[in-house]
Image (cartoon, rainbow, N blue to C red; front, side, top):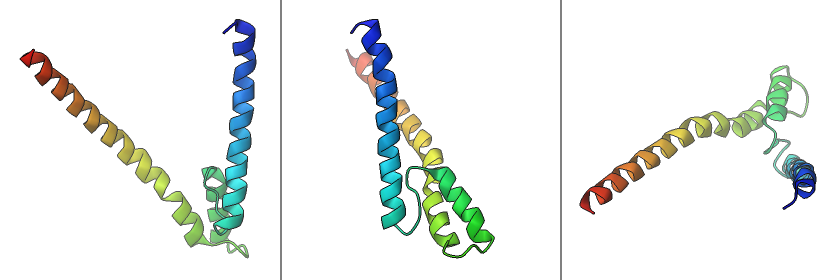
Length: 98
């Protein structure tokens, strides 16, 4: 791929990802009870408005949309490091047998 094509490809891909994320957020906001799935900042803002007793917003829905973020960001690295250490041990054992 030439330099001109690669320079043009990145902005196009970023715009496509932006459009997909916006579409996912719009559909989830309308279909899942006014929560965002791809935009956690919006859920934090809605949680703040709900805590301030803004009409039509729910602390439970916004909180439920937010809880996977910290739990996944904690559990996923631990799982990946466990898998990686298990693979390293396996490779070491196989290498020692060869």
